[in-house]
Image 1 (spheres, one colour):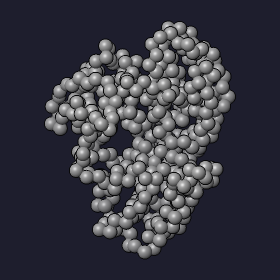
Image 2 (cartoon, rainbow, N blue to C red):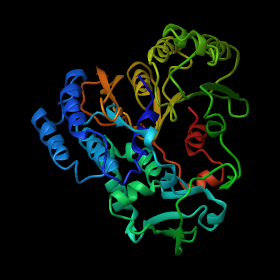
Image 3 (tube, helix red, strand yellow):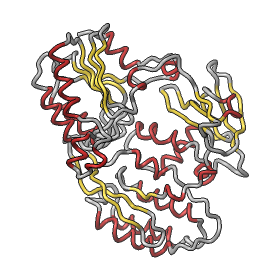
Image 4 (cartoon, rainbow, N blue to C red):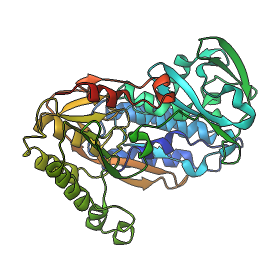
Length: 418
């Protein structure tokens, strides 16, 4: 399975064409109408085929009046309404970079904050975003959610901040006119102000970003495939598992050339079990809060080995961290821990569902050449019809935690000695 990040490329892309389209959209829509249901594992689980055809026919009937990007966004909304977050239309190749806003945003427990912007907009850095052109941010978020399958609130918290900096999308949904982007902001004292910004992407040369007092281990190492750290002063063994991939898996997939760019999970796993034997461990933490997936097999195998170690597999000693970015194969591994071990799941709800479609493939539309990604397999991890994995202990980071370099999940584990 591919990572959820593919979906972000789908959603943040938008065409800039304003002239009459040269693409035969009617033919592409007809092709999509026939091919997607044929190739997908089971596309009509939420809505039926007649609804799919009616929705696409409505778009086809208006293609002479719509711009290209309006047609594509309309198609994406139809696909998203059928409930598979792995299935979408891809058009990042045609993204208009000039429509981007100089904003890097994150949705914390206490709201959406600006973590980075351009130098000329530095006065808005660290402020809470509460409105755009006097439209409440909640209303803006509700509209943007129409562009992806909203299985749960965690999915919205993951995707929406990546879409809020797309001026083209804000214009499409009617929140911006005449190219004016006026932000409603709150500072740390909840004092309200407004600031007008211009379109323009953040670059290495013009970026200014917040600098937290420090960074917890999970953020320091979030770009690594996986890492480990025995924290002597707390007797906590911390495993950070950011991707369900490894050198061994790349070789198994027939990608020998790329395999050398990935660490060995066999070596990593051996080092973990060696440390378990050699070090006094009060708590064992397996963190998947940033894991968007890959292949679940090595994680499942690891869980089956860990469950045999009684001194680790006991209530109050084994913790699994999950969050909004836990998706796809990482969902399967999270359920492995929940179903097979004594682990306490801690953190945020996952964007991914325990039962979900995956193992994606793709095809191109014949005229626009845009790529359609679709699922070929259904993964059933539970008999319950649940939309997310709810942690046993729910802890979400607020903006103040982030600025102070505090990981509230780690602090809770550290202070909850068995």
